[in-house]
Amino acid sequence: METNQYLQLAFAFILVMALMGILSIILKKMNAFQSGMTGKSNRLKIVEQRMIDTKHKAVIVRCDTKDHLVIVSQNGNTVIVQSGMTAPKEDYKKEKVVEGF
Image (cartoon, rainbow, N blue to C red; front, side, top):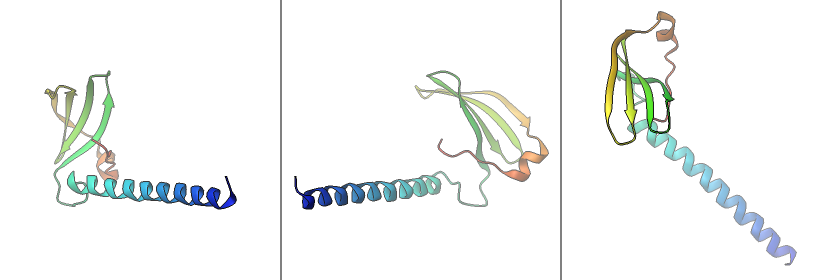
């Protein structure tokens, strides 16, 4: 291979990586917009989520001032385990929201 071909290969690689980065940023913005995390008047927020095992996930969902613990499984079943949990006061001031649900 000649030097010209190496430069062409390097340029193509950099171009593809840049396009992949731009696409990932656009998809993250679209996901945040579709999930409603950008607005100020949203009442429903995902506070935290943890994997229990390979098939089940525990999610804390905040609606207004109440937290709800929900168990979600892969086959689409959702079971509300506990509702009406009151979150600590300092947690509301931070408003830490987990993305990617």
